[in-house]
Image 1 (cartoon, rainbow, N blue to C red):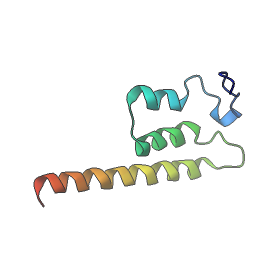
Image 2 (cartoon, one colour; image 1 turned 180 degrees about the horizontal axis):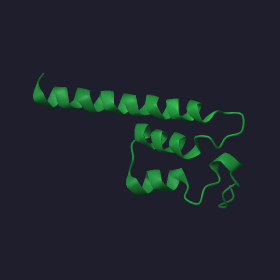
Image 3 (cartoon, rainbow, N blue to C red; image 1 turned 30 degrees about the horizontal axis):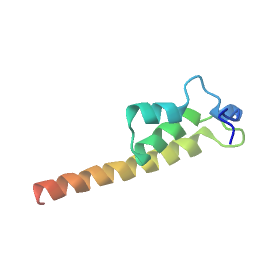
Image 4 (tube, rainbow, N blue to C red; image 1 turned 180 degrees about the vertical axis):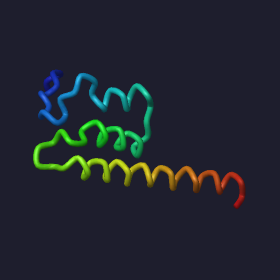
Length: 77
């Protein structure tokens, strides 16, 4: 496979790519998707901004649920 990246569609063509931020910051799957959907919100043709924001919120809600569950287990509640 070629080492060159394929030029992304316009809604992914950002100065700073979300995958680079996700990797550099060591974000988990859930928070990585939050970042991805926020970055492209309103940029994808035919996809309303609200759709991507709701997707981001769904991933954030799941991560919050996980963190709360981990805290409850640690506290023995």
